[in-house]
Structure formats: C-alpha cells, structure tokens
Image (tube, rainbow, N blue to C red):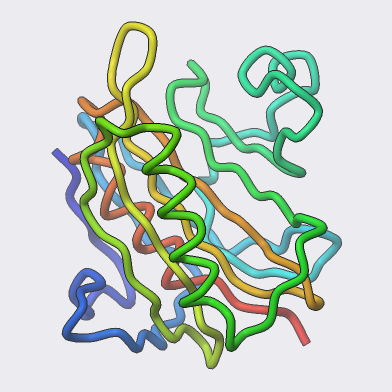
Length: 192
C-alpha cells in the first residue's frame, strides 16, 4: 500500500470535479511495500520539461528498451526501477499538437486504445489544466501475456508537438503506483 508524506500533499487526487491543478513542490516521498520512493524535481528532454521523478529510477539502457519496446517507435526517454517492473516513459512525438487540441487528442488516443485493447478496463479519461497547460490523461488496465498492466498516460503540447508520458506497472502494483503517477502528472511544467 502506498502512503504519501512530505511537502505539498494537501491536494486531493485528480478528479472530474476538480480539473485545474497548480501544485508545485521540489520533492515528495511515498511508502511502497516498506520502501521509500522519493520523487525529486528533475529536468528532462533537453531541459525543456520539469517533472517529479523517482530518485531510485535509472534511464533504461538501449538494449533493454529494444526488448521492452520492440519496433522503431519506442519512447524517447524511459526510466525504470531496479527490476524493470515499473516504467516511466516519455515520447516527444512528431505529431503536431496545440494546447487547445488536448480534448481532441484524448478522444483519438482513447479510440486507438479501445481498438487495440477491447477488453481494457477504463479507470479515467480527463483533461486537466496544469501550470496553465491542458494535459490530457487516461488511465486503464490492459491485458498482457501473463498479467495485466496498469497504464497511466498523460499528454500535452511541447514546441507544437505532442508529448506523451506513460507510467506503467502490473495491476498488482497499481494501488502503490497510481498516486505516484498522479503526483508526477500534477508536477509537470515547461521550462521557460
């Protein structure tokens, strides 16, 4: 079970009734299975984006990334835990996007995932305002070879193109990683 502590935790989880989020903090600590997961503000993607990321995660090496994400369209940047059971991926795509299009982007992504995974269990589909930017978010559980995967995705415009972020774990780990994924999304900010 995940337990959050630290600075800046007075805001509830994202929900449809409260679609504007502005919280900013430099670090947050969660308890996951007796271990502390420290999220620390990091700058990624050529210093264009700030986001809270787990300090204990490392960038996935290219060999492991090719195995985990076969094909040439793998994410631009992938962080993973020691056992590679939880991944945080960022893909600054070539798809044109604007801040105003996030509702449309979300509808298209939901349709794509409904076609790819007709048996998926949908948990949430929403557009939030975070630091003045529209951020589309979708949360679902998809089938995999020998388990089910919890997927938390959020999308926004960066330099006129779509930035896609994904946090995934097994369904069994969802209770721990769901609040962490939401905290990461709330923290995302463009660097001026």
